[in-house]
Amino acid sequence: MQTRHFFLLSLNLILGILFFSSITVTSLFAQELGEDEQDLSVETVDYQGVFFTNAHDGWIVSAVSNGKGRIFNTTDDGDTWDTQYTHDAPLRNIFCTSSSTCLAVGDKGSALKTTDGGSSWTELQVGSQEDLLGGYLLKGGQTLIVIGEHGVIRRSTNGGETWLNVSPDSSLTFTSIRFANSRNGWITTEGDILLKTTNEGAQWQSKKSETTEKLYDLEFVKSDTFFVVGTSGIIRKTSTGGKQWVSQNSDTEWTLRGVDFTNSKHGVTVGDHGVFLATDDGGLTWEALDTGVDATLRDIQCPEQDFCVIVGDQENIFIFNPSTGEVVGNQAEQDQGENAPEQEEQQQSQDLPDLIVTDAVFLSNASVSFKVKNIGTASSPQTFRVHLEWLLDGGSPVPGYSSSFTLTSAQRQEMLAPQGTILFKYPHVGNTVIGEQRTALTEFFSTRFPAAHARTARITVDSQNSIVESDDLNNDVSLPRPEADFFLENLTFNQSNQSAEVTLKNGGPRADGGQTSQVGVRFQWLKADDIPTGNAFDKRVGTIISPANTAGAPVSKPVGTIPADAVKLRATPLFGDRFLVDPDTANDRQEISRP
Image (cartoon, rainbow, N blue to C red; front, side):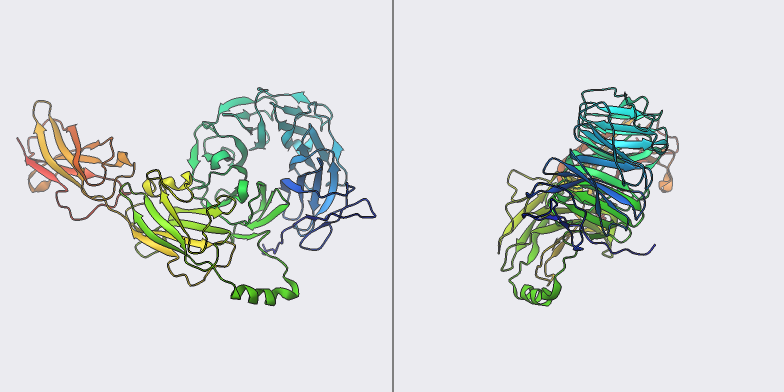
Protein backbone atom coordinates (compact mmCIF):
# COMPACT_ATOMS: atom_id res chain seq x y z
CA MET A 1 0.00 0.00 0.00
CA GLN A 2 1.33 3.44 -0.89
CA THR A 3 2.58 5.66 1.89
CA ARG A 4 0.16 8.45 2.63
CA HIS A 5 1.03 11.98 3.66
CA PHE A 6 -1.33 13.32 6.26
CA PHE A 7 -1.60 16.58 8.07
CA LEU A 8 -3.13 17.46 11.42
CA LEU A 9 -6.57 18.94 11.50
CA SER A 10 -6.19 21.83 13.87
CA LEU A 11 -9.55 23.49 14.47
CA ASN A 12 -9.08 27.15 15.38
CA LEU A 13 -12.41 28.73 16.31
CA ILE A 14 -12.53 32.43 15.43
CA LEU A 15 -14.17 34.95 17.75
CA GLY A 16 -15.87 37.73 15.91
CA ILE A 17 -19.19 39.21 14.95
CA LEU A 18 -20.27 37.48 11.75
CA PHE A 19 -23.19 38.64 9.65
CA PHE A 20 -24.11 35.05 9.04
CA SER A 21 -25.14 32.84 11.97
CA SER A 22 -22.21 30.49 11.56
CA ILE A 23 -18.62 30.04 12.73
CA THR A 24 -15.94 29.15 10.20
CA VAL A 25 -13.80 26.24 11.33
CA THR A 26 -10.31 26.40 9.81
CA SER A 27 -7.53 23.84 9.57
CA LEU A 28 -3.94 23.61 8.44
CA PHE A 29 -5.39 22.88 5.04
CA ALA A 30 -7.13 26.32 5.14
CA GLN A 31 -10.39 24.49 4.39
CA GLU A 32 -13.74 24.64 6.12
CA LEU A 33 -14.78 21.71 8.29
CA GLY A 34 -18.46 22.49 7.95
CA GLU A 35 -20.74 25.29 9.09
CA ASP A 36 -22.94 25.24 12.13
CA GLU A 37 -25.18 27.78 13.84
CA GLN A 38 -23.56 28.80 17.12
CA ASP A 39 -23.48 31.66 19.60
CA LEU A 40 -20.84 34.15 18.58
CA SER A 41 -18.44 33.29 21.39
CA VAL A 42 -15.16 31.52 21.73
CA GLU A 43 -15.65 27.76 21.98
CA THR A 44 -13.36 24.78 22.26
CA VAL A 45 -13.84 21.35 20.76
CA ASP A 46 -12.58 18.16 22.42
CA TYR A 47 -12.52 15.13 20.13
CA GLN A 48 -13.81 12.12 22.09
CA GLY A 49 -14.00 9.15 19.73
CA VAL A 50 -12.95 8.09 16.24
CA PHE A 51 -13.93 5.23 13.93
CA PHE A 52 -12.79 4.34 10.40
CA THR A 53 -14.42 1.56 8.39
CA ASN A 54 -11.49 1.65 5.95
CA ALA A 55 -8.59 3.99 5.25
CA HIS A 56 -10.91 6.47 3.47
CA ASP A 57 -14.16 6.71 5.44
CA GLY A 58 -14.08 7.85 9.05
CA TRP A 59 -16.00 9.74 11.72
CA ILE A 60 -15.07 11.75 14.81
CA VAL A 61 -17.46 12.63 17.64
CA SER A 62 -16.77 15.60 19.90
CA ALA A 63 -17.77 17.57 22.96
CA VAL A 64 -18.07 21.33 22.45
CA SER A 65 -17.62 23.84 25.27
CA ASN A 66 -21.12 25.25 24.63
CA GLY A 67 -22.62 21.94 25.80
CA LYS A 68 -23.25 20.51 22.35
CA GLY A 69 -21.69 17.66 20.38
CA ARG A 70 -20.62 17.40 16.76
CA ILE A 71 -19.99 14.57 14.33
CA PHE A 72 -17.31 15.08 11.67
CA ASN A 73 -16.84 12.86 8.60
CA THR A 74 -14.04 12.26 6.10
CA THR A 75 -14.09 10.30 2.85
CA ASP A 76 -10.54 11.10 1.70
CA ASP A 77 -8.21 9.45 4.22
CA GLY A 78 -8.65 12.27 6.73
CA ASP A 79 -7.35 15.01 4.44
CA THR A 80 -10.61 16.97 4.84
CA TRP A 81 -13.45 16.75 7.35
CA ASP A 82 -17.06 17.96 7.17
CA THR A 83 -19.47 18.60 10.00
CA GLN A 84 -22.28 16.09 9.52
CA TYR A 85 -24.42 16.68 12.58
CA THR A 86 -24.72 18.85 15.67
CA HIS A 87 -26.38 17.40 18.76
CA ASP A 88 -27.71 19.08 21.90
CA ALA A 89 -25.33 17.17 24.20
CA PRO A 90 -21.64 16.19 24.08
CA LEU A 91 -20.90 12.97 22.19
CA ARG A 92 -18.39 10.47 23.62
CA ASN A 93 -18.02 7.44 21.34
CA ILE A 94 -18.81 6.10 17.88
CA PHE A 95 -18.89 2.60 16.35
CA CYS A 96 -19.60 1.57 12.74
CA THR A 97 -20.26 -1.73 11.01
CA SER A 98 -19.90 -0.32 7.51
CA SER A 99 -19.43 2.97 5.70
CA SER A 100 -23.20 3.47 5.91
CA THR A 101 -24.17 2.24 9.40
CA CYS A 102 -22.84 3.85 12.59
CA LEU A 103 -23.90 4.38 16.21
CA ALA A 104 -22.81 7.44 18.21
CA VAL A 105 -23.46 7.88 21.94
CA GLY A 106 -23.04 10.66 24.47
CA ASP A 107 -24.30 12.56 27.50
CA LYS A 108 -27.90 12.59 28.76
CA GLY A 109 -28.70 9.22 27.23
CA SER A 110 -27.80 10.37 23.71
CA ALA A 111 -27.77 7.68 21.02
CA LEU A 112 -27.67 8.49 17.30
CA LYS A 113 -27.80 6.07 14.39
CA THR A 114 -27.18 6.51 10.68
CA THR A 115 -27.77 4.03 7.87
CA ASP A 116 -26.72 6.34 5.01
CA GLY A 117 -23.14 7.19 5.93
CA GLY A 118 -24.15 10.19 8.03
CA SER A 119 -26.30 12.06 5.53
CA SER A 120 -28.98 11.78 8.22
CA TRP A 121 -28.83 10.80 11.88
CA THR A 122 -31.75 9.41 13.88
CA GLU A 123 -31.94 10.14 17.60
CA LEU A 124 -32.80 6.95 19.52
CA GLN A 125 -34.64 6.73 22.84
CA VAL A 126 -32.75 4.15 24.91
CA GLY A 127 -34.76 4.64 28.10
CA SER A 128 -32.04 6.31 30.18
CA GLN A 129 -30.81 9.85 30.79
CA GLU A 130 -27.44 8.69 32.10
CA ASP A 131 -24.30 9.63 30.17
CA LEU A 132 -23.47 6.94 27.62
CA LEU A 133 -19.80 6.11 27.07
CA GLY A 134 -19.81 3.27 24.53
CA GLY A 135 -21.88 1.48 21.93
CA TYR A 136 -21.76 -1.55 19.68
CA LEU A 137 -23.62 -2.89 16.63
CA LEU A 138 -24.25 -6.54 15.77
CA LYS A 139 -26.10 -8.26 12.90
CA GLY A 140 -25.52 -5.40 10.49
CA GLY A 141 -26.91 -2.85 12.91
CA GLN A 142 -30.13 -4.62 13.91
CA THR A 143 -28.77 -5.42 17.39
CA LEU A 144 -27.54 -2.36 19.29
CA ILE A 145 -25.95 -2.18 22.75
CA VAL A 146 -25.16 1.03 24.64
CA ILE A 147 -23.32 1.34 27.96
CA GLY A 148 -22.59 4.15 30.39
CA GLU A 149 -22.65 5.56 33.87
CA HIS A 150 -24.57 4.16 36.85
CA GLY A 151 -24.80 0.65 35.45
CA VAL A 152 -26.45 1.42 32.14
CA ILE A 153 -26.51 -1.41 29.61
CA ARG A 154 -29.38 -1.15 27.13
CA ARG A 155 -29.95 -3.59 24.26
CA SER A 156 -32.17 -3.43 21.17
CA THR A 157 -32.78 -6.23 18.67
CA ASN A 158 -34.97 -4.27 16.24
CA GLY A 159 -32.64 -1.55 15.01
CA GLY A 160 -33.16 0.75 18.00
CA GLU A 161 -36.95 0.97 18.11
CA THR A 162 -37.28 -0.66 21.57
CA TRP A 163 -34.71 -1.31 24.30
CA LEU A 164 -34.24 -3.66 27.25
CA ASN A 165 -32.19 -3.15 30.41
CA VAL A 166 -29.68 -6.03 30.55
CA SER A 167 -27.33 -4.66 33.20
CA PRO A 168 -26.33 -6.99 36.06
CA ASP A 169 -25.02 -4.12 38.26
CA SER A 170 -26.44 -0.62 38.61
CA SER A 171 -23.57 0.70 40.74
CA LEU A 172 -20.77 0.59 38.18
CA THR A 173 -19.70 2.88 35.36
CA PHE A 174 -19.23 0.91 32.15
CA THR A 175 -16.52 2.44 29.96
CA SER A 176 -16.06 0.44 26.75
CA ILE A 177 -17.53 -2.54 24.91
CA ARG A 178 -15.98 -4.86 22.33
CA PHE A 179 -16.91 -8.19 20.77
CA ALA A 180 -14.50 -10.92 19.66
CA ASN A 181 -17.17 -12.38 17.36
CA SER A 182 -20.92 -12.21 16.91
CA ARG A 183 -21.65 -13.80 20.30
CA ASN A 184 -18.76 -13.21 22.70
CA GLY A 185 -18.07 -9.75 24.07
CA TRP A 186 -16.59 -7.88 27.04
CA ILE A 187 -17.23 -4.60 28.86
CA THR A 188 -14.65 -2.67 30.91
CA THR A 189 -15.64 -0.83 34.08
CA GLU A 190 -14.35 1.63 36.64
CA GLY A 191 -14.71 -1.10 39.27
CA ASP A 192 -12.71 -4.26 39.92
CA ILE A 193 -14.68 -6.40 37.49
CA LEU A 194 -15.18 -6.96 33.77
CA LEU A 195 -18.42 -8.13 32.19
CA LYS A 196 -18.61 -10.99 29.70
CA THR A 197 -21.37 -12.19 27.38
CA THR A 198 -21.60 -15.35 25.28
CA ASN A 199 -25.06 -14.69 23.77
CA GLU A 200 -24.81 -11.44 21.83
CA GLY A 201 -25.16 -9.28 24.93
CA ALA A 202 -28.50 -10.68 26.13
CA GLN A 203 -26.94 -11.55 29.51
CA TRP A 204 -23.70 -10.42 31.15
CA GLN A 205 -21.62 -12.18 33.80
CA SER A 206 -19.20 -10.46 36.17
CA LYS A 207 -15.53 -11.51 36.01
CA LYS A 208 -12.80 -10.31 38.36
CA SER A 209 -10.38 -7.97 36.61
CA GLU A 210 -7.64 -8.78 39.16
CA THR A 211 -6.79 -5.07 39.44
CA THR A 212 -8.07 -2.10 41.40
CA GLU A 213 -7.32 0.29 38.51
CA LYS A 214 -10.13 1.76 36.45
CA LEU A 215 -10.21 0.30 32.93
CA TYR A 216 -11.20 2.47 29.98
CA ASP A 217 -10.71 0.45 26.80
CA LEU A 218 -10.06 -3.02 25.45
CA GLU A 219 -8.97 -4.46 22.12
CA PHE A 220 -9.08 -7.99 20.72
CA VAL A 221 -6.25 -9.44 18.65
CA LYS A 222 -7.70 -12.98 18.70
CA SER A 223 -10.94 -14.45 19.98
CA ASP A 224 -9.36 -15.29 23.35
CA THR A 225 -6.56 -12.69 23.37
CA PHE A 226 -7.18 -9.06 24.23
CA PHE A 227 -5.67 -6.05 26.00
CA VAL A 228 -7.16 -3.65 28.56
CA VAL A 229 -5.82 -0.21 29.54
CA GLY A 230 -6.66 2.27 32.29
CA THR A 231 -5.46 4.37 35.20
CA SER A 232 -1.85 4.50 36.43
CA GLY A 233 -0.64 3.43 32.99
CA ILE A 234 -2.00 -0.09 33.39
CA ILE A 235 -1.79 -2.41 30.39
CA ARG A 236 -2.91 -6.00 30.88
CA LYS A 237 -3.15 -8.86 28.43
CA THR A 238 -4.99 -12.15 28.50
CA SER A 239 -4.42 -15.02 26.09
CA THR A 240 -6.90 -17.30 27.82
CA GLY A 241 -10.16 -15.44 27.40
CA GLY A 242 -9.80 -13.61 30.71
CA LYS A 243 -8.81 -16.60 32.86
CA GLN A 244 -5.24 -15.44 33.39
CA TRP A 245 -3.76 -11.96 33.00
CA VAL A 246 -0.26 -10.62 32.43
CA SER A 247 0.66 -7.03 33.31
CA GLN A 248 2.82 -5.14 30.83
CA ASN A 249 5.22 -2.29 31.50
CA SER A 250 3.93 0.95 29.99
CA ASP A 251 6.61 3.18 31.59
CA THR A 252 3.97 5.78 32.43
CA GLU A 253 1.79 6.60 35.42
CA TRP A 254 -0.73 8.60 33.38
CA THR A 255 -4.17 7.20 32.59
CA LEU A 256 -4.43 5.31 29.28
CA ARG A 257 -7.80 5.79 27.57
CA GLY A 258 -7.64 4.10 24.18
CA VAL A 259 -5.96 1.07 22.63
CA ASP A 260 -5.96 -0.56 19.19
CA PHE A 261 -3.93 -3.22 17.37
CA THR A 262 -3.38 -3.66 13.65
CA ASN A 263 -2.31 -7.28 14.20
CA SER A 264 -1.09 -9.44 17.07
CA LYS A 265 2.24 -7.58 17.19
CA HIS A 266 1.62 -3.92 16.36
CA GLY A 267 -0.47 -1.87 18.77
CA VAL A 268 -0.93 1.67 20.07
CA THR A 269 -2.34 3.13 23.28
CA VAL A 270 -2.97 6.78 24.16
CA GLY A 271 -3.97 8.73 27.24
CA ASP A 272 -3.60 11.75 29.48
CA HIS A 273 -0.93 14.43 29.05
CA GLY A 274 -0.31 13.48 25.44
CA VAL A 275 0.85 9.96 26.29
CA PHE A 276 1.28 7.93 23.11
CA LEU A 277 2.82 4.43 23.28
CA ALA A 278 3.46 1.89 20.52
CA THR A 279 4.51 -1.76 20.52
CA ASP A 280 5.78 -3.99 17.73
CA ASP A 281 6.20 -7.16 19.81
CA GLY A 282 2.71 -7.85 21.09
CA GLY A 283 3.09 -5.63 24.14
CA LEU A 284 6.30 -7.10 25.54
CA THR A 285 7.72 -3.60 25.26
CA TRP A 286 6.08 -0.22 24.72
CA GLU A 287 7.89 2.78 23.26
CA ALA A 288 6.86 6.34 24.10
CA LEU A 289 6.36 8.52 21.01
CA ASP A 290 6.34 12.28 21.23
CA THR A 291 3.15 14.18 20.41
CA GLY A 292 4.38 17.56 21.60
CA VAL A 293 1.11 18.18 23.46
CA ASP A 294 -0.05 17.90 27.05
CA ALA A 295 -3.72 17.37 26.22
CA THR A 296 -5.67 14.19 26.93
CA LEU A 297 -5.68 11.82 23.95
CA ARG A 298 -8.94 9.88 24.16
CA ASP A 299 -9.23 7.38 21.34
CA ILE A 300 -7.29 5.55 18.63
CA GLN A 301 -8.44 3.53 15.65
CA CYS A 302 -6.31 1.64 13.14
CA PRO A 303 -8.32 0.51 10.10
CA GLU A 304 -5.21 -0.67 8.21
CA GLN A 305 -1.66 -1.84 8.88
CA ASP A 306 -0.05 1.52 8.18
CA PHE A 307 -2.82 3.90 9.17
CA CYS A 308 -3.94 4.86 12.70
CA VAL A 309 -5.87 7.97 13.77
CA ILE A 310 -5.59 9.40 17.29
CA VAL A 311 -7.96 12.07 18.63
CA GLY A 312 -8.12 14.04 21.85
CA ASP A 313 -8.96 17.20 23.71
CA GLN A 314 -8.12 20.68 22.46
CA GLU A 315 -8.81 19.70 18.84
CA ASN A 316 -5.90 17.28 18.58
CA ILE A 317 -5.73 14.79 15.72
CA PHE A 318 -2.68 12.69 14.89
CA ILE A 319 -1.98 10.22 12.10
CA PHE A 320 0.38 7.35 12.96
CA ASN A 321 1.98 4.79 10.66
CA PRO A 322 2.92 1.68 12.71
CA SER A 323 5.08 0.38 9.86
CA THR A 324 7.38 3.40 9.79
CA GLY A 325 6.82 4.87 13.26
CA GLU A 326 5.95 8.24 11.69
CA VAL A 327 3.65 10.54 13.67
CA VAL A 328 2.04 13.52 11.96
CA GLY A 329 0.25 15.98 14.21
CA ASN A 330 0.33 19.36 15.91
CA GLN A 331 4.10 19.68 16.01
CA ALA A 332 4.86 17.68 12.88
CA GLU A 333 4.30 20.14 10.07
CA GLN A 334 3.64 23.87 10.31
CA ASP A 335 3.29 26.00 7.19
CA GLN A 336 6.07 28.57 7.52
CA GLY A 337 5.30 30.25 4.18
CA GLU A 338 7.72 32.72 2.68
CA ASN A 339 9.18 33.56 6.10
CA ALA A 340 10.64 30.10 6.65
CA PRO A 341 14.24 30.89 5.61
CA GLU A 342 14.29 34.02 7.76
CA GLN A 343 12.90 32.12 10.78
CA GLU A 344 15.46 29.35 10.34
CA GLU A 345 18.29 31.88 10.27
CA GLN A 346 16.97 33.47 13.45
CA GLN A 347 16.81 30.09 15.19
CA GLN A 348 20.39 29.31 14.27
CA SER A 349 21.55 32.53 15.89
CA GLN A 350 19.68 31.90 19.15
CA ASP A 351 21.31 30.75 22.34
CA LEU A 352 20.75 27.03 22.79
CA PRO A 353 20.44 24.59 25.68
CA ASP A 354 22.95 21.75 25.70
CA LEU A 355 21.81 18.69 27.64
CA ILE A 356 24.31 16.10 28.88
CA VAL A 357 24.33 13.10 31.22
CA THR A 358 26.88 13.14 34.04
CA ASP A 359 27.80 11.32 37.25
CA ALA A 360 26.11 8.05 36.33
CA VAL A 361 26.84 5.22 38.74
CA PHE A 362 25.29 1.95 39.84
CA LEU A 363 24.41 1.99 43.53
CA SER A 364 24.80 -0.91 45.93
CA ASN A 365 21.27 -2.21 45.37
CA ALA A 366 21.71 -2.24 41.57
CA SER A 367 19.76 0.97 41.09
CA VAL A 368 21.35 3.76 39.12
CA SER A 369 21.96 7.42 39.88
CA PHE A 370 22.70 10.03 37.23
CA LYS A 371 22.33 13.73 36.49
CA VAL A 372 20.89 15.54 33.50
CA LYS A 373 22.67 18.86 33.16
CA ASN A 374 22.19 21.85 30.88
CA ILE A 375 25.57 23.36 30.08
CA GLY A 376 24.16 25.64 27.39
CA THR A 377 23.34 29.32 27.52
CA ALA A 378 19.54 29.02 27.21
CA SER A 379 16.77 27.32 29.14
CA SER A 380 16.09 23.66 28.59
CA PRO A 381 13.73 22.47 25.83
CA GLN A 382 10.07 22.15 26.70
CA THR A 383 10.35 18.39 26.40
CA PHE A 384 13.31 16.11 26.83
CA ARG A 385 13.59 12.35 27.11
CA VAL A 386 15.75 10.07 29.21
CA HIS A 387 16.23 6.72 27.49
CA LEU A 388 17.59 3.62 29.26
CA GLU A 389 18.70 0.51 27.42
CA TRP A 390 20.85 -2.59 27.76
CA LEU A 391 23.52 -3.27 25.14
CA LEU A 392 25.25 -6.42 23.90
CA ASP A 393 29.02 -6.74 23.68
CA GLY A 394 28.97 -5.27 20.18
CA GLY A 395 26.93 -2.24 21.28
CA SER A 396 23.59 -3.21 19.76
CA PRO A 397 20.48 -2.98 22.01
CA VAL A 398 19.06 -6.05 23.74
CA PRO A 399 15.51 -6.54 22.37
CA GLY A 400 12.87 -5.95 25.02
CA TYR A 401 15.18 -4.21 27.49
CA SER A 402 14.75 -0.50 26.92
CA SER A 403 12.64 2.16 28.58
CA SER A 404 12.03 5.88 28.15
CA PHE A 405 10.83 8.67 30.37
CA THR A 406 9.65 12.00 29.00
CA LEU A 407 9.64 15.11 31.17
CA THR A 408 7.50 18.06 30.05
CA SER A 409 7.02 21.49 31.53
CA ALA A 410 3.45 20.62 32.46
CA GLN A 411 4.67 17.65 34.50
CA ARG A 412 7.48 19.42 36.32
CA GLN A 413 8.19 22.99 37.32
CA GLU A 414 11.84 22.30 38.06
CA MET A 415 12.89 22.53 34.43
CA LEU A 416 16.56 22.93 33.70
CA ALA A 417 17.52 26.56 33.71
CA PRO A 418 20.76 27.54 31.96
CA GLN A 419 23.59 25.74 33.75
CA GLY A 420 20.98 23.79 35.75
CA THR A 421 21.02 20.19 36.99
CA ILE A 422 18.39 17.55 37.78
CA LEU A 423 19.41 14.45 39.72
CA PHE A 424 17.68 11.16 38.94
CA LYS A 425 17.81 7.94 40.96
CA TYR A 426 16.12 4.73 39.83
CA PRO A 427 14.84 3.06 41.90
CA HIS A 428 14.23 5.52 44.73
CA VAL A 429 17.16 5.54 47.14
CA GLY A 430 16.93 7.50 50.36
CA ASN A 431 14.59 10.42 50.83
CA THR A 432 16.19 13.14 48.73
CA VAL A 433 15.56 12.95 45.02
CA ILE A 434 15.65 16.12 42.92
CA GLY A 435 13.54 15.90 39.79
CA GLU A 436 10.94 13.36 38.86
CA GLN A 437 10.61 9.99 40.59
CA ARG A 438 8.72 7.58 38.37
CA THR A 439 7.47 4.13 39.37
CA ALA A 440 7.49 3.20 35.71
CA LEU A 441 11.27 2.96 35.70
CA THR A 442 11.96 1.74 39.21
CA GLU A 443 12.22 -1.87 38.14
CA PHE A 444 14.30 -1.30 35.04
CA PHE A 445 17.69 -1.64 36.68
CA SER A 446 16.83 -3.61 39.79
CA THR A 447 14.73 -6.40 38.30
CA ARG A 448 15.03 -6.12 34.53
CA PHE A 449 18.61 -7.30 34.18
CA PRO A 450 18.66 -9.20 30.90
CA ALA A 451 20.58 -12.36 30.11
CA ALA A 452 24.26 -12.48 30.94
CA HIS A 453 25.42 -11.53 27.45
CA ALA A 454 24.18 -7.96 28.00
CA ARG A 455 27.21 -6.12 29.33
CA THR A 456 26.39 -2.41 29.33
CA ALA A 457 23.58 -0.06 30.39
CA ARG A 458 23.34 3.16 28.38
CA ILE A 459 21.57 6.34 29.48
CA THR A 460 20.76 8.92 26.79
CA VAL A 461 19.13 12.33 26.99
CA ASP A 462 17.73 14.12 23.97
CA SER A 463 15.21 16.79 23.05
CA GLN A 464 11.99 15.83 21.35
CA ASN A 465 10.52 19.10 20.13
CA SER A 466 13.05 21.89 20.66
CA ILE A 467 16.38 22.95 19.26
CA VAL A 468 19.37 21.94 21.34
CA GLU A 469 23.08 21.99 20.82
CA SER A 470 23.78 19.25 18.27
CA ASP A 471 27.34 18.43 19.25
CA ASP A 472 26.21 15.12 20.91
CA LEU A 473 29.02 15.48 23.42
CA ASN A 474 28.17 13.64 26.63
CA ASN A 475 24.56 13.21 25.52
CA ASP A 476 24.80 9.62 26.67
CA VAL A 477 26.80 7.60 29.14
CA SER A 478 27.38 3.84 29.37
CA LEU A 479 27.88 1.87 32.56
CA PRO A 480 29.39 -1.62 32.74
CA ARG A 481 26.95 -4.09 34.18
CA PRO A 482 27.75 -4.82 37.83
CA GLU A 483 28.64 -8.40 38.63
CA ALA A 484 27.71 -10.80 41.33
CA ASP A 485 30.39 -13.18 42.62
CA PHE A 486 28.77 -16.16 44.27
CA PHE A 487 30.99 -18.54 46.22
CA LEU A 488 30.68 -21.26 48.86
CA GLU A 489 32.23 -22.00 52.25
CA ASN A 490 32.02 -24.65 54.96
CA LEU A 491 30.48 -27.62 53.15
CA THR A 492 29.45 -30.36 55.60
CA PHE A 493 27.49 -33.63 55.53
CA ASN A 494 25.24 -34.82 58.36
CA GLN A 495 24.99 -38.61 58.35
CA SER A 496 22.15 -38.68 60.88
CA ASN A 497 19.69 -37.05 58.49
CA GLN A 498 21.66 -37.54 55.26
CA SER A 499 21.69 -33.85 54.42
CA ALA A 500 24.40 -31.49 53.20
CA GLU A 501 24.90 -27.89 54.28
CA VAL A 502 27.01 -25.07 52.88
CA THR A 503 27.22 -21.27 53.17
CA LEU A 504 26.45 -19.28 49.99
CA LYS A 505 28.03 -15.81 49.76
CA ASN A 506 28.23 -12.97 47.27
CA GLY A 507 31.53 -11.14 47.03
CA GLY A 508 30.55 -8.86 44.12
CA PRO A 509 28.80 -5.48 43.97
CA ARG A 510 25.65 -6.87 42.36
CA ALA A 511 22.72 -8.38 44.23
CA ASP A 512 20.41 -10.91 42.65
CA GLY A 513 17.94 -8.08 41.96
CA GLY A 514 14.96 -9.90 43.39
CA GLN A 515 15.38 -12.97 41.20
CA THR A 516 15.82 -15.12 44.29
CA SER A 517 14.32 -18.21 42.69
CA GLN A 518 17.32 -18.38 40.38
CA VAL A 519 19.94 -18.42 43.16
CA GLY A 520 20.88 -21.49 45.11
CA VAL A 521 23.20 -24.47 45.48
CA ARG A 522 23.53 -27.79 43.62
CA PHE A 523 24.75 -30.83 45.59
CA GLN A 524 26.12 -33.83 43.65
CA TRP A 525 27.71 -37.16 44.63
CA LEU A 526 30.67 -37.99 42.38
CA LYS A 527 32.56 -41.14 41.42
CA ALA A 528 36.22 -41.21 40.61
CA ASP A 529 37.22 -38.87 37.77
CA ASP A 530 34.39 -36.55 38.84
CA ILE A 531 31.70 -38.66 37.17
CA PRO A 532 28.21 -38.01 38.68
CA THR A 533 26.65 -41.02 40.39
CA GLY A 534 23.03 -39.96 39.77
CA ASN A 535 20.66 -37.06 40.06
CA ALA A 536 21.72 -33.71 41.47
CA PHE A 537 20.01 -32.16 44.49
CA ASP A 538 19.16 -28.47 43.98
CA LYS A 539 18.14 -26.04 46.72
CA ARG A 540 17.05 -22.48 45.95
CA VAL A 541 17.45 -19.77 48.57
CA GLY A 542 14.53 -17.64 49.64
CA THR A 543 16.45 -14.50 50.53
CA ILE A 544 18.41 -12.01 48.49
CA ILE A 545 22.13 -12.53 48.56
CA SER A 546 23.03 -8.88 48.98
CA PRO A 547 26.22 -7.36 47.54
CA ALA A 548 29.37 -8.15 49.46
CA ASN A 549 27.42 -10.41 51.83
CA THR A 550 30.12 -11.61 54.20
CA ALA A 551 27.66 -13.45 56.45
CA GLY A 552 26.18 -15.47 53.60
CA ALA A 553 23.11 -17.68 53.55
CA PRO A 554 23.21 -21.22 54.97
CA VAL A 555 21.82 -23.72 52.47
CA SER A 556 20.95 -27.28 53.46
CA LYS A 557 19.42 -30.11 51.45
CA PRO A 558 18.81 -33.85 51.98
CA VAL A 559 21.02 -35.66 49.48
CA GLY A 560 19.84 -39.25 49.98
CA THR A 561 21.77 -42.40 50.86
CA ILE A 562 25.41 -42.24 49.89
CA PRO A 563 25.88 -44.24 46.66
CA ALA A 564 28.23 -47.18 46.99
CA ASP A 565 30.56 -45.89 44.24
CA ALA A 566 30.61 -42.25 45.43
CA VAL A 567 33.98 -40.87 46.51
CA LYS A 568 33.07 -37.25 47.29
CA LEU A 569 30.28 -34.65 47.57
CA ARG A 570 30.45 -31.42 45.56
CA ALA A 571 28.47 -28.18 46.00
CA THR A 572 28.31 -25.47 43.30
CA PRO A 573 26.38 -22.17 43.17
CA LEU A 574 23.24 -21.91 41.04
CA PHE A 575 22.22 -18.73 39.27
CA GLY A 576 20.04 -18.04 36.25
CA ASP A 577 21.12 -16.46 33.00
CA ARG A 578 20.08 -13.00 34.25
CA PHE A 579 23.16 -12.93 36.46
CA LEU A 580 26.50 -11.74 35.31
CA VAL A 581 28.87 -13.60 37.60
CA ASP A 582 32.56 -12.96 38.09
CA PRO A 583 34.34 -15.69 36.13
CA ASP A 584 37.30 -16.06 38.50
CA THR A 585 35.88 -19.41 39.84
CA ALA A 586 37.68 -18.80 43.14
CA ASN A 587 35.74 -20.71 45.81
CA ASP A 588 32.93 -21.25 43.32
CA ARG A 589 32.72 -24.85 44.44
CA GLN A 590 33.23 -26.81 47.62
CA GLU A 591 34.05 -30.54 47.89
CA ILE A 592 34.38 -32.98 50.78
CA SER A 593 35.38 -36.65 50.75
CA ARG A 594 32.83 -39.34 51.38
CA PRO A 595 32.40 -39.88 55.14
